[in-house]
Image (cartoon, rainbow, N blue to C red):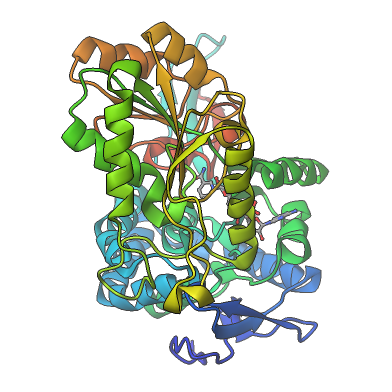
Length: 493
Ligand code: NAD
């Protein structure tokens, strides 16, 4: 295959999308811009795909699924994944610069994600040769041998948000390659560039034409036709709960399988015996990292009343000391929000917090001094005196905003922590083992972290309870999302 795509220049030049092993334009010829959120500069234009392009990509994915890809042995898929991991490692700096420039992630943080992303690819490589069914003794009359087979589900439509383009792409494409599925991935219109770079690396690694397709476009013009498409066997989606609901509705046509990683309003509980030296920075960065644009943000901070004031004061000092700026500066700890629209949304919550009577402890404003004026920067913010019914305590903000809420007893805090439609994650800080186990059991969340936060392991399932979605990413559960189980009965008497 020839790679007729210039390397990532991030200088405003045009890039094409990747369908059937070729770099192509949208059928309509339309394009859209993507900007650097740190300074508003247009860094590239990409095709603005529509229904026809989704048709073309699904057809390419189907041909590949039925064609040579179906004859790849597990060990060949494993080798491919290991080669992809190697190329990712070699081009990691390029991937980091792409994420930083397209979605604002501080480069130091992007660089720090290397082990996690490479670990995912190598985990899937390992799993490619570990997929198997079972033989099952049964009580049927006659002599019948029964066994199960695990078969790839087919063409997978993957739809991802802007906040972690590299990890989200790998989390969707990696298991597809491990199981023998093919993929049509639609990145967020806010951050489409790194998935295109990833497609380049995958092609270079030898992924056959049509196995991985990247279609750039908006949610309504490209995402919705993908979700509805009768030729798609499964949708794997990460994004907001509202979009997740529309994807479930769109899936009804062919009853395609769906797995959903959605929003959250995760509680972090700091008990009286917590190690504050550890708890303060971890609780702060559970939200401020990625400027709060993290689905697992621990944005409801429940602090035992005896230590509440001290904790909030320390948290505010920590927040005030964070270095904010263009993520391309390696000293930057907090980058911009993705877009002016997201900035407006977060500013709306900052106003709502004050209007509803919360006490602003630190931050609370857009930052517009000097070079920051051209970007979408918000100061890391802590509100105290928050009640459970305020909007800032109930709705997902997706910005650097923590609501601190005092509590008195464990029973009370469990009830309040679980009083949310979401159930993605929870954090607990305590030195008491029994408290750690009790809270881990009682909190309704797909992940519970004790004396840490954000730990993600490719071998450990991640996903939501309640309206944070269903299905799991990570671990063997993840591979099962891409497989059908077939029961086979053979009469041998
Ligand atoms: P979003 O739901 O607006 O968009 C996500 C993706 O869906 C984008 O690619 C978008 O173009 C597409 N889309 C939009 N409308 C669509 C439609 N009708 N049909 C099909 N596709 C459509 O989410 P966002 O604003 O990009 O991301 C933020 C949200 O994602 C937050 O709610 C956050 O919590 C969630 N998120 C969840 C996880 C997780 O793992 N649980 C991880 C990251 C982000």
